[in-house]
Image 1 (cartoon, rainbow, N blue to C red):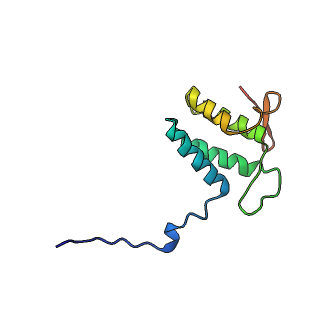
Image 2: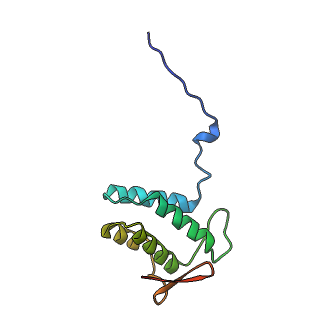
Image 3: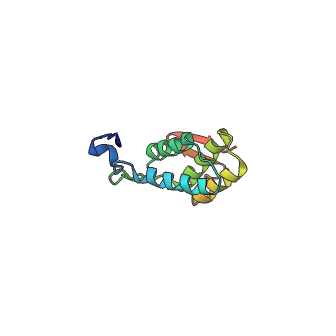
Length: 117
């Protein structure tokens, strides 16, 4: 005699459509990095999402946001170094985000001008 345990959940539990396009992109990047043996911490992903939402340079369409890629790259690399990611991880992130590392040694985060170390 076989006993089968059934777990039921609401249909909304199985939907992931509420994930923003940015979050989907970051999850894909995390999977790609893992395939290469690189770990991108969830704290860094959350920081990138928050940065993009705070620094939107055009009116978002739906849940999509756009920020300056140079500032985003600078913020991402600075945060990665603060989290003490290894050199290979930092290089992966640098190649992932197109653009320069900030603007002449600085980047904007909201109203704050931040120096890149």
